[in-house]
Figure 1 (tube, rainbow, N blue to C red):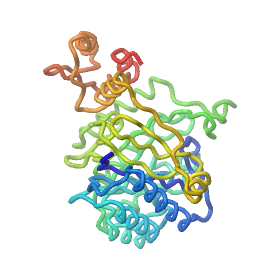
Figure 2 (figure 1 turned 180 degrees about the horizontal axis):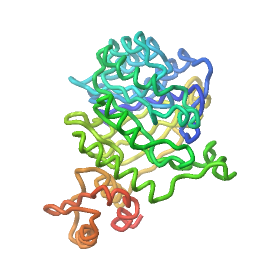
Figure 3 (figure 1 turned 30 degrees about the horizontal axis):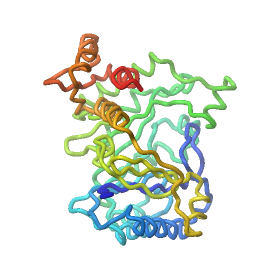
Figure 4 (figure 1 turned 90 degrees about the horizontal axis):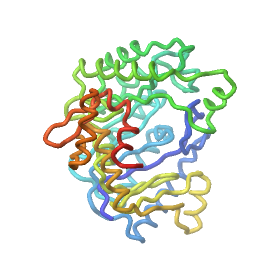
Length: 370
């Protein structure tokens, strides 16, 4: 395995958001030393078993959870640990997911000094009452301040996360959120439609009738409004959920969508060597325990068949602006999409339109059979 892309999962959060089903560990006090010691053990284990090597990393992504909860020095130590086991390519993209309330001047300056050059900021909305409903720990004012603080520290590449299709009873204005985000002049915007995941607080609220998701029409209207607004502001809608200014696409996520090899470390992290996908145990305590005991943190894996890899290639191609170079039989299907306004076909390459992206799963299934 020769990964040039590394993902590090940092599971800690101050609280669980209403919609979250990620592998997280809610801690009042973050066990920084314990976590970093376990990271060293996993990287040592992978080095011994050939899953880590000295190939220069082009991208490193610290995700979660909330990696920014490690603070300035904790993140710097985490970056240093990665550098012990991997060389870093020239002009890398090194991303840190951060909550706005963790972005202090002291933290941001330490992150920048350590090598963080991109921040993915979990804003979600600029409406304070909606943030409280989401169980977020920051305010809209802190989100605005975080962007300015990061830039002042020298981190110029900033991505903003927003959530759309929220329950109508919240009275949140999606147009206002888009305008507020654009006013901050970010380099990248990621959008996520709210969904109900099993076992989350939102699932329980919905089951009790205390909350209801927006309907399909609202979902489509808000997605298309985001597309029109961001594109008019100079952003490229380069993947179904992502917009970027020129030269600011997420290089790390783009590697996933291109089918590149990647290494994932930390609880629940996934890795892919081009044929086999594997994943670590999800509970933080079990991940630590396995490594401390000299065992592998891997929970399972699967080797993709030729048909699996083909279907995945089609799906990943259709979700990006690059599109999918179709076979003759698939072109016949795609021409009907083009007639409906869901796709454009150019030199046998099929690219979905925003209206097509709203139907991504069903359209891809029509080609792959999955």
